[in-house]
Image 1 (cartoon, rainbow, N blue to C red):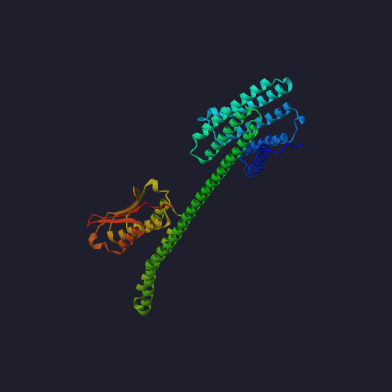
Image 2 (cartoon, rainbow, N blue to C red):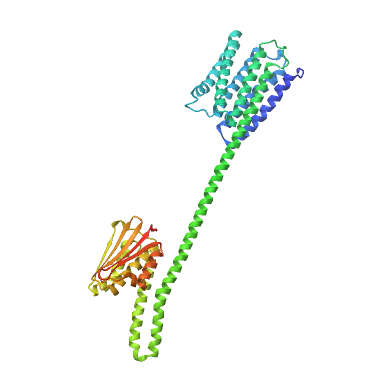
Length: 457
């Protein structure tokens, strides 16, 4: 026959239902998140629910329907299993440090073995030997140990109280200790002395513990989600920056190509266009003045040859096949050797060994090539020299090209506006270089171009 409903029964039923819902919820969470924290907490909740449910069943049974020692034996065993899983959960939840929390880690490791030993002992003592005094001594000893364990865990939590997560854990630990002590104190008095029975106080401790610990886990899940969101935001920001950088690089490449197109168009207009205009003019003159047609045809032939050379130079400078400095110089030597040999002029090239295999950016390569060729041609036409020396060397700020002849020289203050010199200066400054020319009558000429921090491609 069922006992009359009373407040203690209602407390046990209420707490049992609350623990069941908490166990079910955190088990579902575990299957979604697969964390050790959720696994240890779910196991603790399920065993605690079994203990609470067992006490509900005892409420509904008459004393004659069960053996007192068997009931208290099962009750104690389940309760100790719950405490054992409680300690294991606390060890996981507090993120114990191997250096700072050696004592706590030691207790967490030995607690399951002590509790299992106690369970076996009390089963044997109660059921086999029947010595109640030994059982109560062991009962007091294990509870004293668990109280000590709880205090150690509480001290560790309080040391980390600045973090909200540990405040929740501390609240749960304090609630469990306080309600456990009240339950033990009430147990010392006669059974009907207090309205709230020892078991109800213990159940209230379990309930408060579940509230605090569930809040701690909820906070940690939220914190992890926030950290993941922050990490994702950081990754997205980095991706945005990378995309922005790539976009800027694409714009730079596009702008470089556009600039190169304009430079090629300018070269074609200035060099090839001017030559074609001359050819057209001499063709008209040859038609209008037949007596001088041979002279005009000769000029047309010379202009055509120059135009072919200029077109060949532009095409070669843009080619990707002959790209390093050593090959550039080989091309120059091959182009100029016939002309210099015909005038008995010694043409000498010198390159820094460190630069021979360097691959300059295409526009830099083109301007170096055309500048050197322009300087050699100027020396051949105007200097009356016996030797021309070309050197390409590495300097601190970049690369330096120097063309030196031993010719008659000139006054740079008077002749600096010449077309050839202007072209060389333009080619140097076009890629942020520094152009200088040194000369004086009877002292030869030195053409120098320094290209600052070149992009080797």
